[in-house]
Image (cartoon, rainbow, N blue to C red; front, side, top):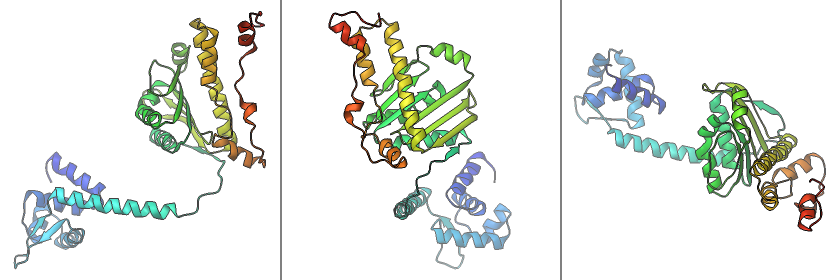
Length: 314
């Protein structure tokens, strides 16, 4: 079989469930048809018995048609028609599989830590986390993984997910709260890898370190542990909030603006966050978190300056 287009077509058909010989026969018939099984076997230099067996399979799959006559010649089903049929068939199979799998009992609470081995695994897990998130996505992310996930983050923000991100290069995502690390240039010069932290709903946590340029995984873990997910949700928001306050202070922002920054980034473990009840269940506690305990209170410095008194921070 000569020519790159033919080889690419054979490889593509192999990905769709045809074996190598079936793919080669179909591609041959696309170029030279109609033809008998004997003629096909001669042309592609394959044993006739194997070719006839492959033709039977292609007939069963609806990929070729057999002449109703003495010569028993075959022709390929037009490629567009074949691909449309395969698409409908796979769609039906996917729907049936999704239905069957959804009826299976879910796994028990899994608090173990799992290692991810490849960049594709890391990015696929991040995308799955973002797609399943219902409330919050909090990230600490370097430029290369950000570029790979930017469209996914934008889609999450577009559907109303609260997305909070600390970046290490100037960038923006519409609808997300983005904080550029004040020391991003120094950090990137000092740190020879690409860092990624993602927490969603305080229920899942992923951390990965990838080599710059190649994307090779240095270390990457994922867990649905309520303890680790809630802890990282809280600590990461605190880190991002601190970075935002440093940014505002460097810009000599008024105190009212700094307070607004703090309030906008304050998502402690309230009952509304999915991870909270999971953590309480794990601890054997059913006591709901009092919303008043989570109230954002202004720093005493803000209150005293508003009242005209001297600030303890001054």
